[in-house]
Image (tube, rainbow, N blue to C red):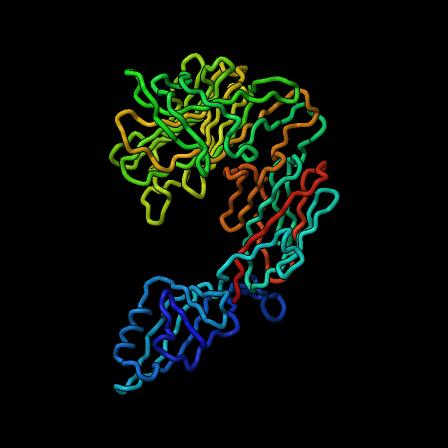
Length: 506
């Protein structure tokens, strides 16, 4: 049975449509200018909106007065609603009533008509089209990896309007540059001149919780003094629980301590030179901070120390608000004058709809953050950028240990029930033994280029500055087109590529 759904209501529960004019396409709006010879020159072409007139007869046996009021209720919207036709199950229109709702009845039968206005003139797919190595060669296109490290991508946009793709690229080899050549223009990021065999420094991953999901290489540091604050007791425990490390027990506390919890520590593995410690260290981690009720409290810290447990830097989340939902993301530094560098307040919600202050940093679907030490420069990620401070006396100080702490305030009995370290990796930069450079895009790094939003991220961290000046985000035209992905000239192992886009029809 043919059905028409508008918003959450089925219009066909009340009426039988006698005529629906979806048309072939929206009209072209042409901008022209006079030619020196005959006729005019077309300067630009723009697709206009679309109208869908619909005529109906009220279903026999229904009360025509009730139907009249119901149709008025459904159609009298001040915002666009999704319009679905059952013979186009994969598509919807964004539509709103235009003009008058005509309705004629004789008390027993009724006929009428109305017109829905589609401002963008297009039908949209209910799901995103995806092209990757699994479905390559199918109806959405083909991905071909080449021996020179490049990738040839045939994209088939089965819609009739341009699409704005998200392109996810996973590097299977260190890389310093990416270009995407397409009929819509050229996109590039990184540095085309970045070399691989001339410099004598390299990044080296020392730890990745992806291969140590239970954080087993971190050992309990029960009773050890917290490197950032001795007022944080460490006689409790933290354990791996479902998604990551979480608070388990508070433990005993001394009279001078204001909180208690558990702590784990790992000494950095030796690099390929056999050396332990890193003056240049990058750490990417994923955190969750979501309170299930107002007034829940708790503390989370990732602390970086030298071999003697002296603090170099720390990244933490503290919620001491015992009545509301306020929390702070805090950065600490060591050196001659250990102190709190800066702190940013946020609400520990889950970024649910209609939140006045959504927690877009540490919710269930995000959580990516990082820390970078480059000599004396210490950088802490917060909302799209790094907050950096220069501490001269730390330039040659090597990070040798990483402490993970979670605790609860002594005077609170409501622990934040979604506080977790879900992932952590550690990469040492500038290792002198290696002859190739620490390239900008490490082995296994994931680059996401979103043409719709005009954004770039690397491993979930916003990286807008990577885009080369003048580069354009790609737009996929209707039909078949080709994208050529080219990495740095010395790359011989092509990356993995996945494209996804919303397919629209006129």
